[in-house]
Structure formats: structure tokens, C-alpha cells
Amino acid sequence: MSPLTPPGTLHVVATPIGNLADLSPRGMDTLRAVDAICAEDTRHTRQLLGHFGIERPLLALHEHNEADIAGRLVPRLQAGESLALVSDAGTPLVSDPGFRLVRAARAAGIRVSPVPGACALVAGLSVAGLPSDRFVFEGFLPAKGGARRSRLHALAAETRTLLFYESAHRIGESLDDMAHAFGGGRPAVVARELTKLFETVLDGSLDALRAQVAVDANQRRGEFVVMVHGAPEAIDAREAEGRRVYAVLAKHLPPSSAARIAAELTGASRKSLYGGGDGN
Ligand code: SAM
Image (cartoon, rainbow, N blue to C red; front, side):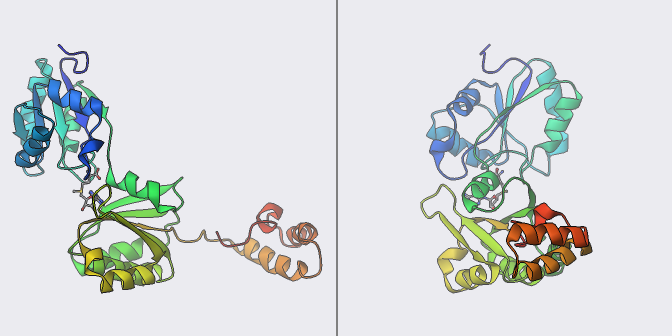
């Protein structure tokens, strides 16, 4: 028994999203040591393993057979086998299969242990320069135009940074629909082919980005993470009045006095007026 793979454990192993050097040493060791590897596409995973000289039995686990396979793998884990779960790229379960197997294993009291690594949404967020303390990951938008537009309109008032996965087929249409739903001036970032040879990270307003992607066919190739600045925080009527009064007073008084008086007159927060009020 390897200390890396205690018996009866399901290891959820992240694989690279492009650059093969991003498979972690522990990921490699784990894949080498387990009894078998559950893979979304066994041919794809065999190639990856081949690159690292790893040979282990592979089991296909994809969205169409996952419920059935989970039912068969749990007894194997209970009998003491150690298994790994990988997807084609990045972190399993993130817009990828695996959740049913993990749920079934946990329900059976089996240890499920992560070997973290690449994940396109985290890689994208880490280079976007958008607020990242709170964000929402929306995965893939619906393929059909009507459903996509209603999903986007439902998100128009979301104040947290929005993250989407997108494919080459739909990047242009999705950016157009985002500009309509969120307003063309909304800041956004399009991260393409992260960690690969033709990696690009474009930022600008949604209108500028969709224009750039429309005129440059290269910018419509590959895999994408689209990130959009959240909507400005809605402010209540008292704060709005406070800002109006502060703006008038600040023409004649030092900002701190203007803020104090505006806060007294309107009930708005002094702190939000002095140094605040820029709409961020
Ligand atoms: N599980 C993966 C992860 O951890 O990111 C995501 C799998 S999902 C089926 C594939 C989507 O992830 C692509 O369509 C694209 O939106 C995004 N993606 C994957 N690799 C990427 C890369 N190198 N650059 C940008 N986006 C990528």
C-alpha cells in the first residue's frame, strides 16, 4: 500500500488545462499508485498518462454512464481499492462529470480526497484584475439564443464578478448578448487558451471586446473564460440624497465638513459620502 493512496480512497485529481507541466508531482504520484483511474475520455487520458509514462487501468466515466458506474465503483472502494477520478482537463466536477460518483462515495462513508491543480475559472480570475473577493461561476450559458439571453438578463443586477465558460462556436454571440443584457460599457475580460501557446487575456468594455473578437478570427479560436464586472451596488434613496447634498456642499466646504453636514441632514452614512460616492 502506498502512503499516497490509502486503501478504499477516491482521489479527485486535477489535470492540466493546457500546459502539461501543470500536473502536480503529487497528482502524478497518485495516478501512478492507484488501482484504476476513472476518466471522462479514456483515449484522451491515456495520452496524458503516456506523456508521464504512467500505465494504469482506465474506466470510462462520463455524464451518460455516471450513475450506473458510481453504483459499481462504490463496492470496489469499500473492498479496499484506491481509485482516481480525472476529467479531460482541469478539476473534475467543475463543468465536468464526477459529482454523482463523489456523492455516492461520500454517502457510503468512503474517503474522498482532492489532489488540487489547474482550473480554468481560477486561472482566469487570477489574471483578470476584476474584483475577486466574491464572484459567481455560471459555467456554460445555454446554447440556444433565447435561453441564453434570458439567463443573462436574470444576471444583470448581480453585483459580484460573473464568470462563464465559453467555446469557440459561441464566443461572438455570447459577448453580443452580454453587451445587450449588461450594457456595452460594463468592464469585462476574455481569457483565451490559458497556459497554452496562444494564450491571450483581453480586457475592456463589453462593446470593445465584442468588436475586437468580431474583427479578429484568431480571437474566436480555442477555449475561453469570460469574466464580467458585477453591476454597481444599488444605493437606497437616503444614500442617494446624501450624495446629492454632499456634492452641493463640497463646492463650498472642505470634504470632511460637507460629508458631516450632508450625513446630518439626510441620514446617509458619513463614511460612505467622504471618500465614497464614486459608484464603485
Ligand atoms: N474542469 C475544467 C476546469 O477545471 O476548468 C473545465 C472543463 S469544461 C468542459 C471546458 C471549458 O473550460 C472550456 O470550454 C473553456 O470554457 C474552459 N477552459 C478549459 N481550459 C481552458 C483554457 N486553457 N483556457 C481558457 N478556458 C479554458
